[in-house]
Length: 156
Image (cartoon, rainbow, N blue to C red; front, top):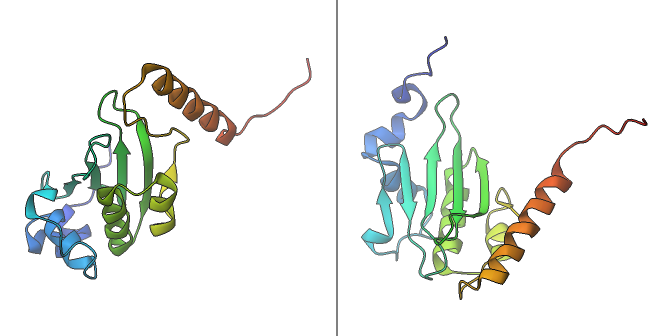
């Protein structure tokens, strides 16, 4: 069994700042400067959460990978935990742009425009928690996931 590298080797700059949240704020080139401190919270030394300003989004989670230096994000709707956006990048400033767009509540397509590494899952937001629209959102996400899969067609 191969052990993951020591986080101090992959993320010395982050650990020197005390948390991923602090490193993210610094790498943001000012785009996170106006956020209140409680909007960007550490969730461990190599994880952070960015609270959304709209109630139909859970906090965006930002995580460091264990095997290679890379950042991942995931944004969900809060009621059922369905993922709306995800993605990974090597650039922490790109993560900051995605976090700001998520925080500001811009449409999901605008989050992707702000940070092109962000993958839209195909689900759409349902601010009013309408069960019919939530089911439609989930089906749309499943259809998109199926479309993105590689299939090998064989004749019977």
